[in-house]
Length: 370
Image (tube, rainbow, N blue to C red; front, side):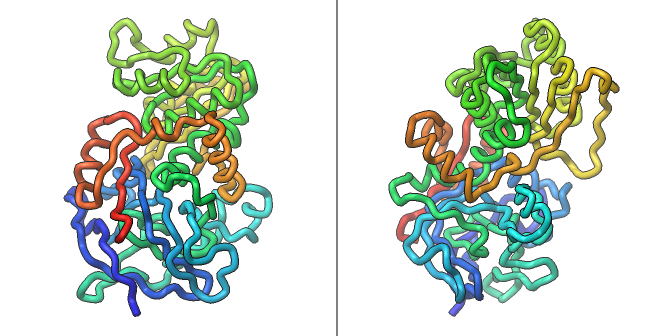
């Protein structure tokens, strides 16, 4: 029998999501149904609303979630009903050359329930197919995903907090520890102090950075960045700051060792590049628009490097347990990251707060009985 659930459906661009009763197909071989406890509201979801990324419609957005396994298909071995899990929105195959060389975030054969070219597995009340976003569609009480898309976690971890690990935390911390491999004693600059940027900051502290310079246009976001470990802040709306790249070079007598751009705009990518000194590394973490172009000063004789990053170059089956161990040890601030809580019916309010620059991460919390 189809599985009923409530979900926030995007039926047109630049319009509010509609809360609807939809159905999921029964789990096929290798698939899992998860009853979500919570899902984070990420800028990647908000970016889809404008249509610039060509997201197929109708679609259920959301990709950062955690919950309890409710049903499994044939052949599922790693999880069983009742297990607590975090969703991994890149369900990697484990066999392609990228997976085999330690880069599962670049998997060339992602194992989504709605496979490339296959029919939708979600349906509305008329039977019309609804697409899944990033192999998850977590703006819903239940999700249908591949076994490869769930990571088991201990039952004593609060699921509201675990939800944030599935994107914001792994992306931010991984950008530092896996993509850039920040060295102890380094100077780090972070452009953008939203949910992911805050985790870049605390990832840099974990890596032993001596200084972490946070850059943002919001005084509230910068105050939160201080709580997460930033040693210095630059408010881009302050006329005394001016060009943040120039300000960072002045503060550091030549430039930061690493700069992380967590916004996705060509101008801030260029600023991150200009803020690093010789042999520095600039890492683009923010989601950039398709076909956008960045103009950089050719400064390659100084052995500077510009690096791309997706999902923090993470290895979820390794990194999710590690991150949660650090949380248990009090070395990662995850409770403080969860700044606002919403119901599913308030999803448009949550997205509006995100667009408005509200600091920290918003979380949709589902009815435990749902």
